[in-house]
Image 1: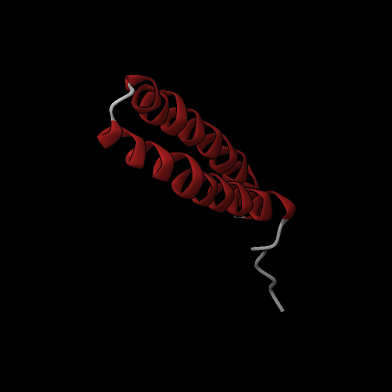
Image 2: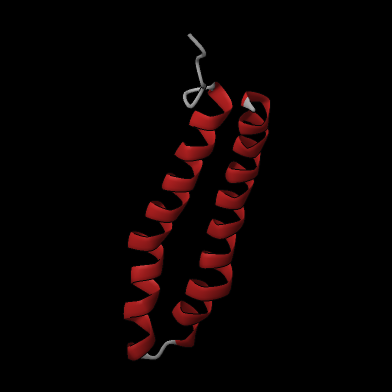
Length: 75
């Protein structure tokens, strides 16, 4: 079970990278480039608030899974 958790840690880190790429390049960047004022606020929220929270959270979870922080000890 612990090996599965380590493997899934890699999956979570990959998911964090994919989510960051998607959020910035598919959601925020087109809104920045549109030039309309009503699109700037969601673009700023996506880039400076949601992007670090999502990528950081998923990345930390994956890192801790890979390093064995969630290991089950049988005493």
